[in-house]
Length: 280
Image (cartoon, rainbow, N blue to C red; front, side, top):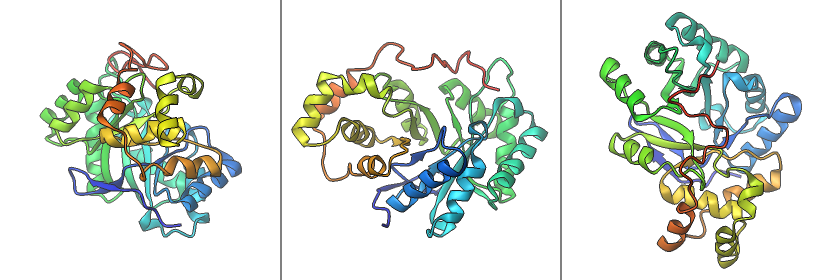
C-alpha cells in the first residue's frame, strides 16, 4: 500500500507526512516485524531514539521492507549525556552504525537538560552533521520557547521540528503558537495520552459515535486539524491501519474546541517539565 498521508514542507524545505509511527518499546525481532508492518500499511515517517535502544531494530525493519530507503523518513534523537560537541558527533555516528544507515532524515536533541546547559553545543554538532551529510533535517524535542530563542541567537539556525508532549489533556496552545510564529513544525509524542483515560471521556465517545469512528481516530484527527504531526505507536497491524484512516472525515470547530477543552493546567503524563527535567 502506498502512503496517502498529507505532507507539509518544513522551514528547511524538507517534506514530512502529517502522521508518523512511534517505535518506543518496539525492540528485537518482534519490534522489527511490527515496524515492518507499519511501513507496509503506509507509514513513511518512523520515529526512534538512541535511548529507546532500538535504532538497530528500526534499521532491520527498513531492510526488510520493499519500500525504497529514499521514500522513508527515519528519525533518531541525541540523549542528554552526550550533549558535549565531540560526544554528540560520535553519538550521531554511532546511531547510524547501529541502524546500518548512511544518513538520518531527522535527528533531534531529545531534551534541553537546562541544568547541564550544553544544548547549544549539541545543536552545533547537529548543524555540522547536517553539513557533512549525516542528517537531512535537524530539530529538537521538548524545547521551551526560551531554549529555541537561545539556539537562534547563538547559532542563527532554527529547528525544523520540535517534538513535544501533546494530547487532549495537554494541548500546548502557547507552545504551538510560538512554533507557528517561528515556522517550526510541531510534532506530538504520546498523542493519544493514556488510552484508558481517553476511552472513558464522554466528549470523545460522543464525537466518535457521531462520525462512526474510534476515539483514537477522533483524537488523531484533532491533531491533524491542529496542524501537528502525531506519531502514535501500535503493535497491532489492524490498529496501525485504523490510526491512518483519519483523512476521510473532519471535525467541526465546536468538536475541536470541546476536545481542546479537556486540557489540564499541567496535564503532563510523566511530570517531565523541560524547564527542570534532565534526561541522560
